[in-house]
Image 1 (cartoon, rainbow, N blue to C red):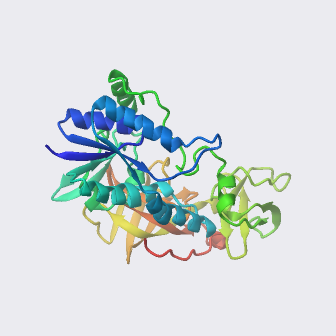
Image 2: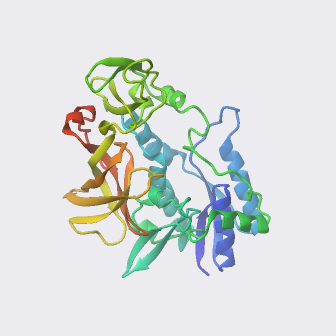
Image 3: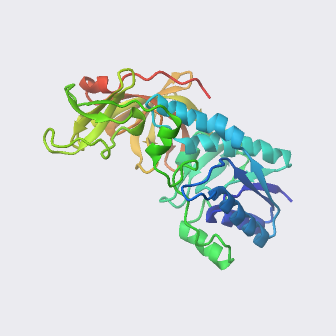
Length: 375
């Protein structure tokens, strides 16, 4: 009998994954990862609640259950990176880094010590083996597909992973949980970054980073307002700038940052060309399955909820790629991840480093960002 160590989060997705794996004849071991230890605004440790729910599900399914503490690994590999990126004016995606460094790295290594044949996660994604290579596929539920968050997982780790609910719709998952009377059947899906939860995001940043207020400039360099710290803003953002009674009357949007001079740039109008890019450079590309040729066409996502857009990718060497968009893309953001796709297959992903503006006149709003050391 093959042993599977399953990451149980205390949510319905991992709960149903455990039940399905047991039905399929695997020896299932549930493992709850404690990555962060802090109470929420009401003084409640939500991790403790989630761990209890996971244990109740494991008891109901009659599978072994354990808790493992990865707080140090999370602090060193995810949280510290998160703070460094925000300090540099970027907008990182800690969920993607958590998948890469914790769930498919530290967790995998721990599971192998438990003599696991596979690990499993409750992600809406799938994988297949073709010509001896592991490929990552989108989840069947297009509204829940999480392949974007897995696009920087190394193939070696994915080859050891099962995604039991990857072929299911969310309503099917909840129906299975209700049919089997699992306590998580109606539990609300978790949202947001785990170490922030429902708290005010800017207030959280202020607790951990030095805040440097400064000026907001329009495209002509005129001062139109003042910001509370560059880390509080992301490209394309509309709310929170406090600019009123200036200009044409159209809404203002964040169009760039100059970290050296502590200046935030803003333009008016949702369709302003300064908000769009015709291309970008990204670093630390991770290929899943067979690596593509030097220049190729595919589709891409520069953020999770975005629809795929056509892209032409050029490999620049040393893990750097250039991506050109025939139709331009709005609000691509340094620090975020670009995921590449060939239909249902995710080819891999890289960290957005710098942008190619639609008009070179607006390049000064997005100066070249220095590359981070490879993780």
